[in-house]
Length: 310
Image 1 (cartoon, rainbow, N blue to C red):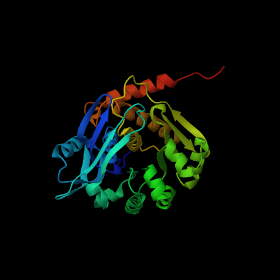
Image 2 (tube, rainbow, N blue to C red):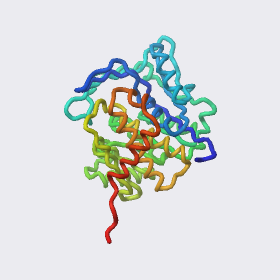
Image 3 (cartoon, rainbow, N blue to C red):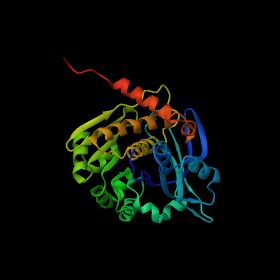
């Protein structure tokens, strides 16, 4: 373990989600990119989370985050405001959500202003928010040693210039295959990842849903991780954020930025994502233990192990 502060700073949305899948439905359940990634990271490291909620946000959710050792002082509560609410459904292709409703509410005017002690964070994850806000956060964390970001198609099409500025300043970008192609205009995923690497990030981690994740370094694939084979997926919401949170939490817990350890982080990220999709909202994480995580990590190793020739 590192002797320095190994807290992970995470900035993103805190939401109440209404989700329907072939296996059920939840109403206004705890969600949001910052929440999924923070809880996933908390299995490995202390977490500082920054977000905004309304007066309708249940205190029990704050209590749950705090029970995970997550520092919630960075969650602003707007008096009289309403929390970001997203409603979506999944049918057939569980990799694609059908958005039914998006109510930004207090999230529309989110302006992340970090508590003073958050600004010394060494490990920073900029979850899927406006890249202009991501840039504002970057200006507040000059001591960061590892910065990762996520994005989405909306920002790629609407805030491309700001996003490219973010990519110049981060070490890692998490992006799905469709977004990588949209950002670069390249159909071939390896060419797309190579271009993104040239924009700035040392590591480009392409999330491929049920097909796992591929990490590109320089102009080549440096690691690929399969997804854990599950017989049933209950709710894919937050899987990508859980991946990123598990990745960042593990790296921070070790203080090791070597390529070998970054590869291990990809597998831990995939492990957390595989657990997340097995129940609605954060329900699976509420009963998960580090022993469960390590057991599945070792299962990943067994599944992909093969001997060299000769």
